Image (cartoon, rainbow, N blue to C red; front, side):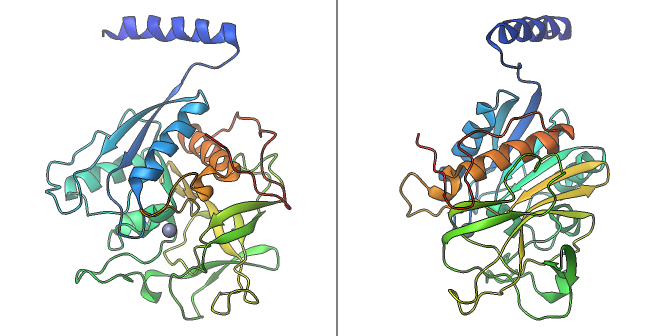
Length: 312
Ligand SMILES: [Zn+2]
């Protein structure tokens, strides 16, 4: 429709929404998905992410699905400009060089990116991507074996003695203990994404991504979790970053390592149904899109003692 009609439509929608007490959707968000490794299943996670974003009333969500694994990617050229944020549930094949360049340009000029769980496994050899996500894990080598990201990718991020520390010394690459409920600890309570959230909350049945590596530049650690050596002998025993905010050029990145689901799982997918996952995703996306967070913390947010699984 012509721009002036679009304006009147938006204004009319805002008026209607105003009468029932909700803000009209203001931010256009792209949900980019379509491939996972054998360890994950985007067909389960991406529809939930779309629902969660729409539930805020703040976003209109366009789903952009890549060609399937193994298919020709050369025609994959989504238009990033015009979107307040690109939310990615994507652990898949490399994009064409022109698409990568367009995404870098979009981000450097003030775009927003949200990286969900295994999305930080993607693109191990894309330098700018590694800068955007701060740190990442695993990733496939050219020979098809997993474990591309190693010590030459950069340091690990740790939280020691009340502050973020970059550890380039100790060996070890990406790993995680078996899924379990674990406490997530807020480390930057004044950040817009974290304001009003509990100091500690119990997240349901997820993987504590550990020993992620990368350039780790311009990263704010929002929350950490501790893989407990007493329960998991091979765990790191270090506070691992779970939620991060990264600045990239004029762009903003919200990186959540939470949200595991695999192809064998049946609902309710507790890690994705956890109100803590949902709310931090919603707040993180608003921040990536606008630099602010206007959402209230809901009453069902998990506490330090109790997980909170939303039923659908
Ligand atoms: Zn996983």
